[in-house]
Length: 226
Image (cartoon, rainbow, N blue to C red; front, side, top):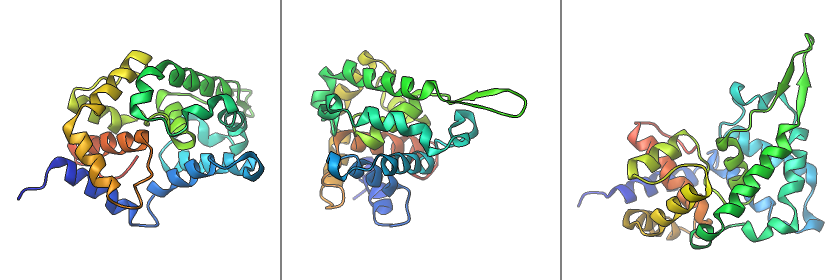
């Protein structure tokens, strides 16, 4: 019997989940910590965990300028993500995300605003600011809230391979989530992962992120999780 693509992709994710040194675990260390109640949550540690997650998932590249800043640059983002008004978006299910796409995008815009005013000045007087891309803000939303997949290069490649909408706007998001919900291969991928106790509690957006990222990498002959 030949291995289906869903089985192949799920096997790739599970193979990384089984290795303690894989960067796949930095997502869980961030996401789980942001679930802590206020009396158990330390703001600085939240910023450090978010920063490490972003770094290990490729966001401290030169083009974003984020690597020039200390983790304190994430302080306002952490405060934003801890607001009670955003609690209902945590671990957002795909079926709910379809009607809450505007709220999710609004959170992404708030993340942008929380980073956009941060700046550094070098010895020549040149001002450096963080470049807040859709990839960066969606990875922050995924890492802390699990309410969006990370719209990176391989995620978009995977979505295009399936013919799914990958525009970073409410309509595009809603269309993407509908496509995933009705897709047999994606449901098979999720079923394979959720048979494993390590993946049983993964939120829908993390599963969608893993599926399209691994599909995009598979189609490009690459390996990895980010």
